[in-house]
Image 1 (cartoon, rainbow, N blue to C red):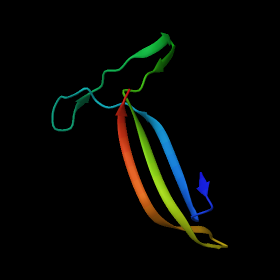
Image 2 (cartoon, helix red, strand yellow):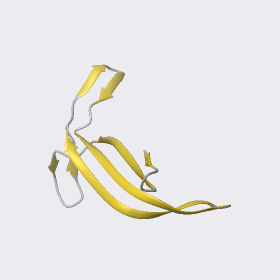
Image 3 (cartoon, rainbow, N blue to C red):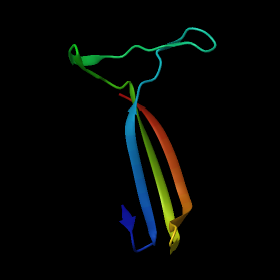
Amino acid sequence: KGDSSEGVETWVVTGPLWLPSSTLGKDKFQYSYEAIGHPPSLIHVPTHFFKVVVVVSPIANDESGPTFQLKKFAAFVLPH
């Protein structure tokens, strides 16, 4: 979403995460999450969601494409 009054743009990305339910050892993790539907057409329900918010200001646009300056950044992990 752009805000031309301040010359900045805000980008938001959201997506699913499947985080482990427990640790079994140094390099081993156990996953446990729900699925809906009937095999073989199961849909796995994410355990969490992530959201990243970035505020940038365009500073140049040449033949290699636009260049932006990072103004603000935030990242969140939310339980489902």
